[in-house]
Image (cartoon, rainbow, N blue to C red; front, side, top):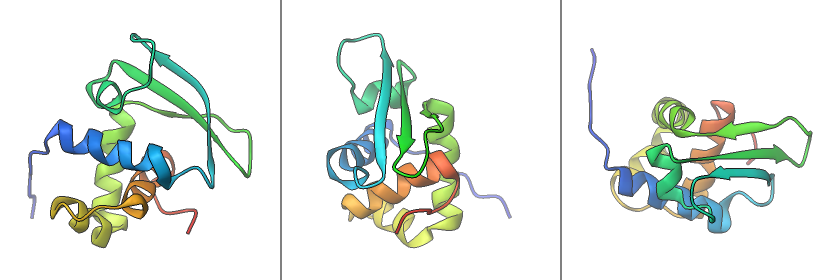
Length: 113
C-alpha cells in the first residue's frame, strides 16, 4: 500500500532548527556552509538554497545535508524511527526528535543514541 502525505516546508525547517540549536552537537561538527545568504538558515536548507557539510566526532568523513538528503531523511525517519516521526507530525518534537531526524538524513538510521 502506498500512502502519500504533503509536508509543510516550514515544519521541516523548524525540525532542523531544533536539531541545530541543541540536538546534534554531541556528535556533529559543521565543516562548511555553502549558502547564498551569509548565514545558515534551516529554511534555506529545506528550499535548496543552502547546503551544510558535517563531520562526526568519530571520523572526518564529510556528510552533506541538502534538500535531497532531507527528503530521504524524512523517509528514513518515517520507517526507522516512526515514534519520532509521529511526534513530529503531532507537533510534539523536541531536541531528540531533531537529532534523530538529522541522523536519518546523514546516515539513514539512528547511529548515536
